[in-house]
Amino acid sequence: NAGVMQNPRHLVRRRGQEARLRCSPMKGHSHVYWYRQLPEEGLKFMVYLQKENIIDESGMPKERFSAEFPKEGPSILRIQQVVRGDSAAYFCASSPSEGDGYTFGSGTRLTVV
Amino acid sequence: RKEVEQDPGPFNVPEGATVAFNCTYSNSASQSFFWYRQDCRKEPKLLMSVYSSGNEDGRFTAQLNRASQYISLLIRDSKLSDSATYLCVVNTSGGYQKVTFGIGTKLQVIP
Image 1 (spheres, one colour):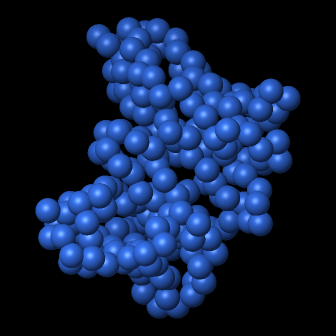
Image 2 (cartoon, chains in turn cyan, brown; image 1 turned 90 degrees about the horizontal axis):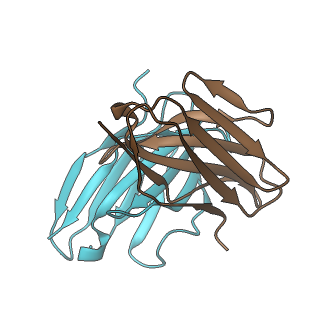
């Protein structure tokens, strides 16, 4: 059981470029959650998805950020036209059903230069 | 008022000490409670669920007080390896069972 797989582990982008973060949930988990963590700050909820559906995107910035969880393949968090303030650790978690304890991936550390 | 509140610390305790963290939650309809541990620059990992009757796992004891709306984590005989940030997590109701994380309490166990 491979756990929650996130890639890349580290991503460096120049301002204005696009960042694509991928997350494959644990086998048998159909609920995916994305969180952002800034240095010395707590985890901030971004979006909750099930296969082909966005359930709650209340934590997503209104512009430049989007997320999907297609029928086939990993969940993708996409950040367009990145700015320095987007630099953070982005964690994906999955659960077998709503409200269960989460299993986290090891995160993607995005650095915008 | 935040949905889940924790004292960010840091709590600096000597090795072998007993330390306790509290966490308060605002939604009285919350149903499930968890403690996670996060090491520096790592992902959070589930430490233990918190049950109404209280539960123990080795040196760790978790308790829930629904009347006062708080949960606690007690660590006995602290080890250096216990140094981490401890995240309080509450399953709140609001259309779906949303899991909300506290900011975390940082523990540093000193030799």
